[in-house]
Picture 1 (cartoon, rainbow, N blue to C red):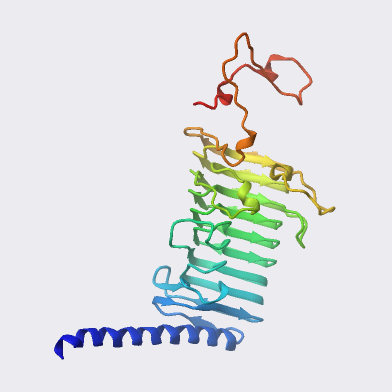
Picture 2 (cartoon, one colour):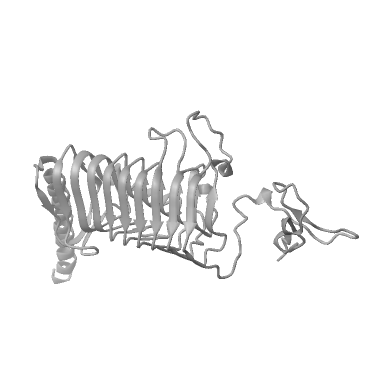
Length: 360
């Protein structure tokens, strides 16, 4: 009899723990449903397994507050219902702060049609090895106004760790993004300031894009400054067909098809393919059906950044069929001519075959 007591005790503790987990989930969701103007929903310290999306809809001036990053942990591993971990919609003046949220089936925190949203001191992450099965976005405000993302950490997203889309009046500051395909992405968004962030060990560090076929057609007035964008050489693990799947590993900052962007006073270090790229949408080789879309970047200023290239080993594997290899040829000579410069001046001709040596 006495030998069975430890196992029985463990069983009772497990049942009690499961009940406590369920009670916390129900309490949080009930408070979100019943929240009134000005309410603060407190989540205690502890590690809690949550089985369904937590949602906050049509609320004003509500705060969802944990006991601190890595003190309050909401885990959606094995999520049974919904895709997002936390979803906030059709609301105003919402504050999310001081907790960790992880392993949602889809996006970890999505906010949509929110006028006034603050993400503060939040860690949003997938805990396993970065993989295409991870959700697209860790922090995902879309079609929002007055977005503030402060002192947050985003890890493991198969698209973008911190993604702000089709929004206006945005700042992203003092955040860390690592092991995502895109660390920080500002897409079809106006009036955005991205500063004092650390984007490292992603496929691409900071991306500023305008894409077609979206309700908000044009982004602009984006400033990217005082950031550390370093060693973004992680393999691209985006699902097939995803637009960021075209971003080569080793991209520091990329500006694609948008306008009025200023990139300055950043430290852009050891990104092996391109430190700062300004490119048209045509680089994606995806047909454009949106007749109002402008695929070219314009009014882009890049100045006063500090670059450290480290060892340059550009990523070619993302489009292997486009490699050009020049080997030794008997009686052959070589010239790389800038075809857009209709001149034979020597500064438009390179005799260096090293970039075309595929056996290096």
